[in-house]
Image 1 (cartoon, rainbow, N blue to C red):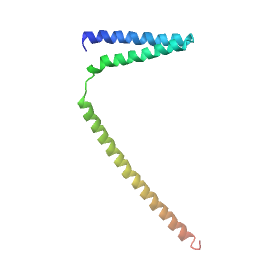
Image 2: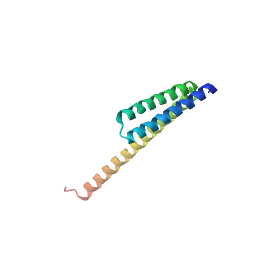
Image 3: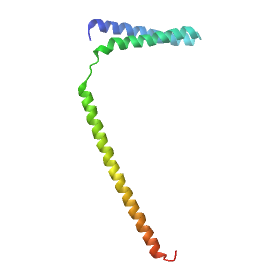
Length: 110
């Protein structure tokens, strides 16, 4: 970030803070339109700050690669969990079948 943009960022920050504080003060004094103007100016100040900083935020392709790896790992984990859940369901079906057979052999007349 250049020196000039740091200065403009400082100016935009002060502008935004003053207008947000002004909005609070005007709202406390029950001056609705006055507070509304300060809110709009505060949002404008936030936009101005974003416009000053945005060109200096690097587009990091390495981050995108890391995210792709994390998504792949998450997908593998979900697949492993699905297999384990299927195994649990199969074990429960088997246990239920055994319980039914035991109940049938204990009470053949039912």
